[in-house]
Image (cartoon, one colour):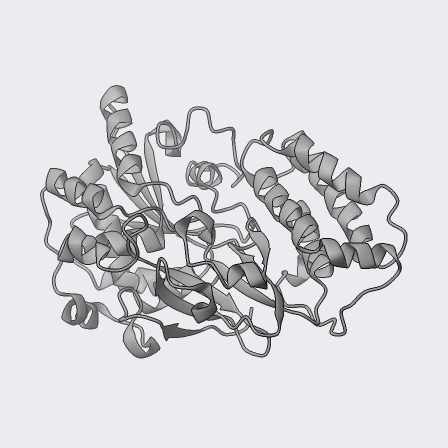
Length: 405
């Protein structure tokens, strides 16, 4: 991925103004000291804030905290807390940018989460930048030890059960979610896995309160979110925006045919539809927004991503081992002008067969992308079936790691 730069669409909350990394002294000057609130009071404030996870699922953060605490009480095991910065999504740069510019905000949130849950261990899991983060840790007088851990550079390494497996000394592969990680995770202890952006928001909520947090966003989706925006002709841009902001203010829609919303487990939507939508936690996924110009081929872009997703599967269950490669191969045929045979019907049928049957949600996310492409690019797929392609520019828009392309 090319270098990432930041911009602001609101007064900055999470990102350091000017794109300058904040050391410990600068961090405390900017945000003020972190007070160690009573855990019960912190949980009440968290509930009132309405904060949801920023890792893709948008699950209510308070409910996840309480689930881990309840599991710890039932089992008598001290919880483990994990800050998830394993940003395996190739099109996303928000977590890397946050950790680069505001590492102490994430570490504050991790400290608060450990205190609120009564954790016995805390980890910060990342693909890169371990030395820089260990330096940030050394600047702090932490009442709670934190270990920085490097995870493999794989799409699924940041999946919560894969992360728990890795921290338990096993391969970073997903496992079936029964029982869930919040009940049995790292070494079978109740485990709270929270995206680093979620923890950074927690650190601000602890300082400024629920009403401050809810002053941005909408009543049903309060707060702001970091997004990685892809527009042809410039590098990916990380922006902070409130929920409810019109998508057309986040990325230019003129001259585009479709928008990828949410990343590689997200959805394609026509630009005309995107023009009527606002930023929503329900569809934000990995926080990726990509504008596909009208002169590019949507099926070709999708085929590249689907091949990558098939290669990145853990290969542990039938839907990933057999289903995703078949879907990717059939969609590659659809992306090339010429006779399609039964490929379109096959893709739709296979999508239904793999959905909901994987050890993790990788097949489900891939199917979500497939179905949106079949709908959004239906006219282009019809043209392909006639031996035509309306695209005049073959330059790829979406990043796919070279060794997987």
